[in-house]
Image (cartoon, rainbow, N blue to C red):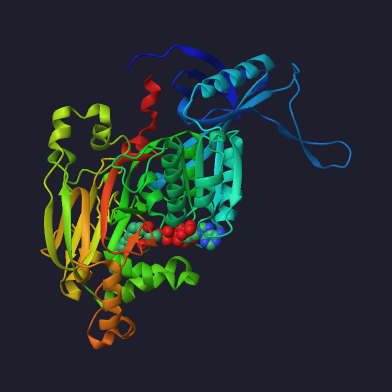
Length: 546
Ligand SMILES: CCCCCCCCCCCCC/C=C/[C@@H](O)[C@H](COP(=O)(O)O)NC(C)=O
Ligand SMILES: Nc1ncnc2c1ncn2[C@@H]1O[C@H](COP(=O)(O)OP(=O)(O)O)[C@@H](O)[C@H]1O
Ligand SMILES: [Ca+2]
């Protein structure tokens, strides 16, 4: 690796130990000197322990500031913060805040304070680090924040104020904060009112449902500003603003699958350092009319029924999904219908190839327009296929959907930004077999390795429930109500299960069941970087070589 020219190199003291501190354009390093009883900067230092070496990439420095010391004031004996004055006899200090990697993909904001006797040297260090940081143009300076005070365990406001705002303030990011007053407040504000020119990004504090509001507001606003009709456009215009997710919901699967954990401080740090992760968005249509967007799970049957039942139990908080999950499993309902899908070509890999989408994923990078050759693009269009049957569940996972309930996800090899979704068809089978399949989401076994499970990587798909085939939605609603409707819905013991389920679209119930879904490759960007490989945090010092 090419050596970078040094910008600064000094002997500074750190916790009364002498350190060689060096800054180049890429990294800040400090290494303890292996000496005992050495006089540095006018003060005696105690015996040093084994020399420790530290290395922080400049792009992971959050901020630098002159250090103030807590001194007791003479009069009332109270503690006050006083800035250090330029005087030859005193020590001067600056503190660097930086990202430190913990277990389980969590990040923390760590600090290191260097002391020196020379005030000018101290200022030179502060200035030089600040200049380096100012060259990192992908970092946001101004953010629009929406907080759902009722998401998850209703701790959104507390999480933002105590865990996130201090990190933003340390990084000198200015924020406008809106605490939502009702559902769709954030979506409508973004769509119609917000002055988006003022911001470098939008942050949502809440769960997958709250993220969905932000996603809809931002995409609709961008299409509206560009004169694009969401109902019929094959190509949508990507938004210039990135979205940050501070997890404070019930499932938090989008945060988990894009960051590797659902930890608010980690997400705040990914925002501060200006990470960028492109993401696919599915548009869902009914009879050529746009319904909704989805980025994680579109689920009919099992996941639709779980969501419908859990909405009545919102007061239970996140536990509602477990209760509704067991109830839905026991009801063992299946639904008939026809699925047609446009498979993605081989270059997109398959849902069973075990190539996981990780930070800097080569499969996803290949899909960014410049990198796909004309030949590959031509070859990526397949032929529509059709399949009918009785299904316990139909799931389309546009990303792995990894979350604490299923750490490997509904489709472990799905990609965040490859322009495809993994269509999982679970046909009618015994309760025991379905349970085996569900349990495989929580262990190492392959959940697709069952005779009643099929999985296809697709670019588009359509679904029509059986009883609606050939008729209009209205006619069928009426006939369904007349034929079985209320009686069967309320008393499923009669053995005549309802003919249709609902679509769970990223945690929202869709009013229609006949849908056409199209994947829009990399339509939005998040303040994230995808899940990091273990090696990144096992060996963070490889960069020290530069
Ligand atoms: C018996 C063992 C059962 C294990 C089965 C695995 C279940 C895995 C559930 C994964 C769901 C991931 C898809 C995420 C969907 C969210 O958008 C949605 C809404 O989440 P939110 O309430 O907004 O956080 N949550 C649900 C459960 O539908
Ligand atoms: N102030 C509010 N009052 C009521 N509902 C809200 C409010 N703000 C947002 N919502 C809605 O709450 C729903 C659930 O929010 P979310 O943050 O995803 O939490 P959870 O993960 O617990 O479902 C979302 O669909 C969102 O539209
Ligand atoms: Ca995808």
